[in-house]
Each structure stands twice: as structure tokens, then as C-alpha cells.
Image 1 (tube, rainbow, N blue to C red):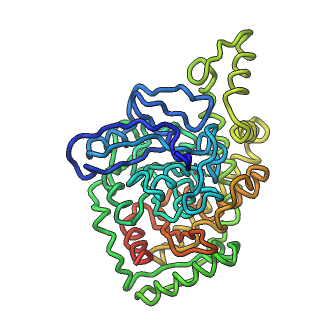
Image 2: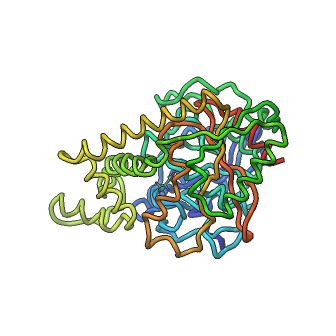
Image 3: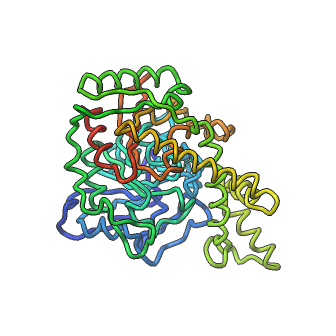
Length: 423
Ligand code: GLN
């Protein structure tokens, strides 16, 4: 496929009827599918075929969906452009010279191009919302605990959730209805939200709703993004919403805290890829240290290696207090800022991404610049809150997304407000 949205095209049939009968749902390649390889976009897992389905895949099948294949992604979810994939970059279907965003770039590109009706992505620090924004589709990062992570290959467990990507708010909500709800195989799932009819919430009635705009999440964005954002906010005001400026003073520390925590968790999670328990086994020779190091040197790409090294450093004796502990303190502060904001407003609105999609090939040399592009999405993961990205307009022919954040298990409120943006 010319967009390179799929790593593996292999049809998985669901049951004959159910709410998703007749629909195709593409699945990100870090979500386990029994009998179909699950690579995480890595050479390390090029030939790994899971023996079981993730809970979300089981639920898709029961709901009658057909899975057309496994979608391309940044290696182990580490990236914002889908360019760190071992299987090559995915192109943005809106303009093929640009990245689709990441790390769930294949899922968003497949939906935007009509190669799948719907898709599942995962979001650790923005990986559903960023590609949804860059490809002009809708993406929901659910409250931590709403959707089971059983069968998701972990990058940073305390931050990530599986969630839907779809052409419309209502379609995304309907897919959330299918995958949400407690799972005995994932002890972090909760009862809350299990019986909610999310699709029914997408009615776009914002009359009487109070929308907070955190100044810190607008200031740093490119002019074209701010213009589109302001116009959309004006429109919501005309539809009856009350708009209030709010402040999230901790926001400036979110990216730093996020990357310390995400890399620390990754360094521990990715230790299992040693060529023996998991991962490419090249028949390495020599002692354990040598074969471990050969398997990992050959199996992982540069960005993954960078993060394992930095994460291991942040957790090491002597540096733990300076980095990991401080990051956890910043995380608590971010949570508290959101709690205070939600005492006054129902939802928070900001640009999803402060930038327009970069051109293909532009980002890999400057990882720090791409980390900073996660300024508006990472605070939400640190606070374990729900958020949606909905198309709000375009500049230079490139899509711009608006992010709505809600209190924990406030999915209905953000789905409703996003439908108003869509109208
Ligand atoms: N861009 C962020 C990162 O590289 C988010 C990735 C994600 O959500 N998986 O970590």
C-alpha cells in the first residue's frame, strides 16, 4: 500500500453479527492478535506471533468487526511521526509529503484514507491524539482504567491506554462502547463507564457548558494553529458555551516529567527483549552479556536505544532522587492543577498539537524538538484523564486538531463537546 499504513495485511474475521458487523477496524501493531504477527514496529519482534488475543481484539471480534491488518507505528510507540518504525515511515494521506503523526500513524492514516472504517491506537503521551490531529480524523484517549491493556505490549504502563480513531465523533464513541469496561485480566480496569452509551453522548449540545482554555497550552502554538483554535472557540461560544480562561502553571514541567517517567518505565519493560525470552534470536554465541547485548544492539533502533539508556540512567542509584522522584512530584502537581481547574469548568480546550504536521524526514535529527511537540498531550496522560482530538480546520491544506480534556471518566462530556466542534 502506497501510504505504508499497514505492517501486516491479514484479515481476521469477527463473529457474524454485533454492533460492528460489516465494519473494518485496523489494529495498531503493539496490540496482540493470536496467530498474526505483532511487531511493535521493531526488528526485534519482526517474527513474533502472539499465542493469544488482547482483550480489545476479543471484544472487536465478538462485536462482529473484521480486522484488515496491523498498522504501522513508531518503534514500541516511541515517537511522534511514525518515522522510527523499522518498517519505514507512513505517509499522511492528506498530503503524502508530510508525516501522519505518531505513534499510531498507521491507524490514523488508514482511517483518513478510507483503508479501514475505524482503528485502534494507543496513547502514552499523545499517540492517538497527535496522528488524529495531523490526519484530520477523531481520536479518543480514554481515562486510565476504562479500557483493558491486557495484550498490549507495554511501553509505559502507568501512562498508556488503548483507544479509538474514527472519521467522526459518533463513530469513535461507538468503538469506545465496544472496547470499554472492566477486564479480570487487567487489575487496573474499573467499573466506571462500563454501562455508559458513549455513542449516544455525541449530540453536540454545549448550551450551558463551561469550557476552560488553559493559557499555557495556547501560548506556545504556531500562529496558524492559534488562529484556527480561536475561531473554533468563538464558534462554541456562539453555540451557547461559556468560555473561561484558566491556568495550569505546572504545564511547563509536563514534557520533562513525562519523558523521565516514560523512559524509566520503558527501560524496565523492554528488558524482556533479550533474544531468549522474547525477541529476535540470531543464534548468538559467547557469554550471556555478549549475546544479550548483540540481540539488543541489532534488534532495537536508535530512538529506542536512546530511551532505554536515559531511562536506566534516571532510575540508577544516585540519580533516582534527582530525576525519577522529581518527575513523580511534578506528576502529582499536574494532577492537582487539573483537579483545581475542573472545580470551575466542565471541560478544557486547547490545540491538540502546537505545530502543523512536519514534512517527512524533517524530525529525526532533532528528538528534543519532537518531544516538545507533546506539550499539550502529555499532561493528560500524567493525570490519567480522558481527552479527544477533533478536526477544527486547516492551514496550508494541513489539518488542525482541537483537544478537549475532561475529568476522570468524563468521556460523555468531551464526546458531546467534540460533536459541537464537528457541527
Ligand atoms: N510522542 C510521545 C513519545 O514518544 C508519545 C508516544 C505515545 O503516546 N506512545 O513518547
